[in-house]
Length: 119
Image (cartoon, one colour):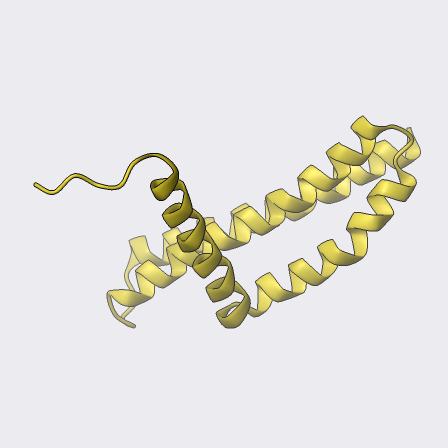
């Protein structure tokens, strides 16, 4: 077995694969583009509205969680769709659970921002 890359070469390769994943999400997922646009709008607002670095960091972190959830949801959907268009209970459940993950991440944004800004 040929050993894989190690050290900085492995980190560079991983960064390249990550960049390809972000490009794929942007190119193929309308929801990712919408959530990225929302983040671009809300990120400066979080910096401006947060009364401390911790508050701003918290408000920004929950925005990143939405993008992370969307990418994971899209990955699940892509794998499920790879196996065919026919409906299967487990495939539907996996897609619904991925969608629920994004919903919860968005609800988390609303809750955290309300708590930070009002209390």
